[in-house]
Image (cartoon, rainbow, N blue to C red; front, side):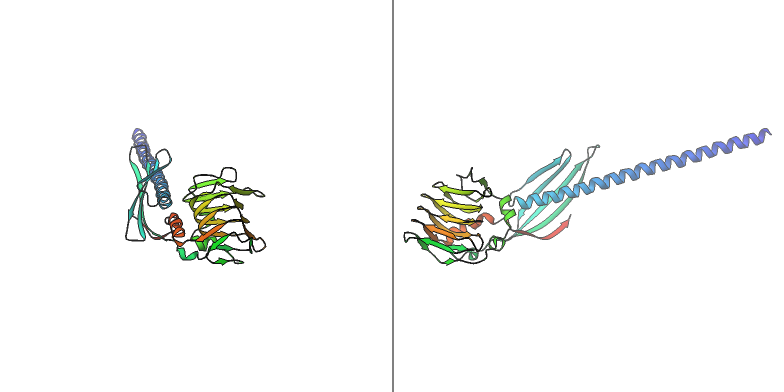
Length: 288
């Protein structure tokens, strides 16, 4: 009887030992799988960081290097390399720091093609969607006029209005408009209001007026003026470059007074230089 009890005791102990070993193995496996899943999540986040770095690199071409952080321990670093025209290589590393002091890294390399906007898209001193109405004979238009046409902003500039507005060097409204005016200047006019420039338009580059505009006074601008609304030009302004009025077919563009508009391809070309790195296309992508 005692021998049977001893056998049962030994068997019970063996069962307990086996269960303990199995439990330990299951626990270890669970911990390892949890760690692998967590590292996989962190690796995906590092990949997203690398993609964010690529987007930042494209947005800031040709600047390099660039460092960014979306939250503590989540960073990216970007390096841009000039390739033969018209290409740039952008190398981006996304990094997530873990508690052990190590980092999980993902590396992405892309080649970007930049597109210069052709000044041949701009062939006229004035282009209007409605009629061009002139008053008196004191004005001077040196160049051709193209009226009653449909203007396509993206076809002309190679980028959308949204992209250009987001990339503007200066962003004003009708109450804050003033110097400086160069690079890309965007003016967002309040609906039912009008931008009136009474002698404070002195600048260059690309000037986009999102709304109605009345130019007057002694003014001087070199480059491209694009008005998304009604345009009235009076006083004695001098514009060297081109003017475009996206007003709709039923709205006239009016010129009166001693206005001088000179079609100038050199000023147009210079103004378009500000768009060089805004029109881009990824031509290759790989994870390294």
